Image 1 (cartoon, rainbow, N blue to C red):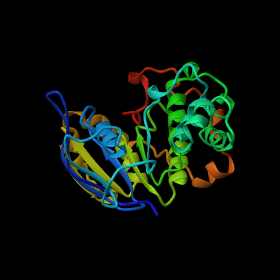
Image 2: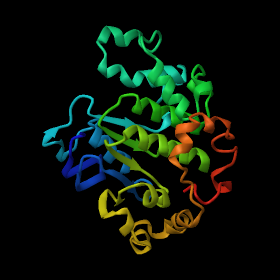
Image 3: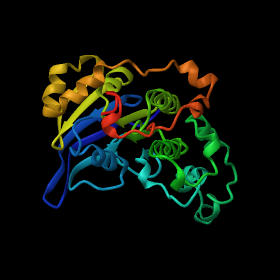
Image 4: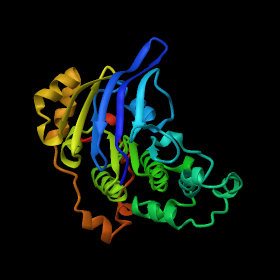
Length: 282
């Protein structure tokens, strides 16, 4: 069972910018929670605080009442954190270096003892044929999927995902979320999303963040348009378009029976600019 996660009055600033301000949350073991809000409101900083990558200026982040330590939390950063000159497989293998002796970690990405878990995850996110490709040659959406696989290979009881569906088409989005949910299983999942429809459909609970503060914290079924209007303000038109577009939720059996199905899809961003993309891209 994954530990209970507690944020108690957490604050983090960068210079004069208060990225996260007095955030208190309790996330029970096994909960799947989506964090939504306008861009630049502290969502990624919140995930980094939970993972222990950065420390709060004040307040506490606790797992079962103790400070965050070791490999209890895995954070799926966005794709720009990968090593471009290394292959997709080497980047995924790097996710488990923390569990290896230091001497083994030096050679593991180049001569892995057991690459099968990493290869399996790449297959499940539709990138089996890209395992030996340099990350620098991949599209933005493909890099995003490599970053997700790198986090999931750690097999941590708590998984944090920062915009795992960024730059993905609807079919690939559904597959990636299915893989994420199935890999986490009964563990705890906290995901930052811009797509409020996905947050409502796929998660137990939704936390709205704006200006570094919690605006609402509700079960997904209790998140109303009025709450979202207040949260997003002038940006809500795009978010409402998201809630009104067709569902991209795929049956779980689709991923289980055809793990590489997404490999037959077109390029993740279809070669379009953000302005040309359909309304489910927010």
